Amino acid sequence: MMNAKVIIVDDEPIVRAGLENWLSRNYKIIAFDSAQSFLEAYKQFEFEDGVPTCILLDFQMPGMNGVELQKNLKSMNAQFPIVFMSGNAQQSDIIDAWRGGAVDFILKPFTPDQVRDVLEKQFNTLSQSISKQTFSDTREHIHIPITKREAEVLLLLGSGQQQSEVAQVLGISQRTVKMYRANLRDKLELNTLGELIKYCQQYESAITKLAKDIN
Image (cartoon, rainbow, N blue to C red):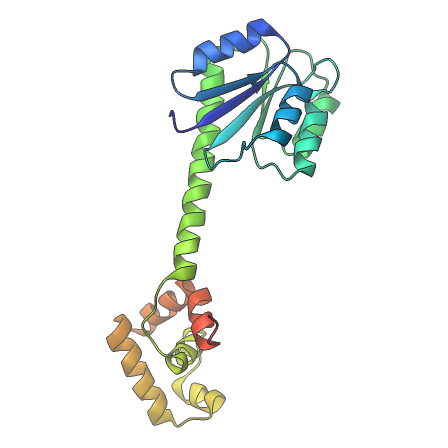
């Protein structure tokens, strides 16, 4: 998964070297020897470049510790999932990390497989999240070939209202509503009420924009 990035923040050279050796075949690796050095780099360089990224963060380090770095990143709206690493963290410390948004916690000493499993899980979660967002954006901007009035009718029918009720709400005849319903069937291939309701739910935002004539 070379299209994913792992940021390692740990003050122990042997830990950094081991993680880089284990993970560099599958991920782009960037390593820092302190929380402060990463924070300074984050302020100066573009880390949120669209590449799925996860942080492996040592809990206890000289100077700024892992939770303090986590709080700083959160205040800067950094969106990286953080996996904490520690050999002797107290339960209260772990709770603070979870409350701060940590996604996992690995106890030292750990094995290569343990680290890989945790990262694979997090990158799968990120991938699913991106897919959902992309699908949401697609629904938001889909082109629906109907008029403003047809969109109004579609929304009302999709909400479960009868054709007579739609006519009353829009101040038009029931015959006119039937004509719009026929147009919707022909243009969108919505032959049954169930299909119409499902379509309306799926693309509600885009249809609402059409009905309100929002550009």
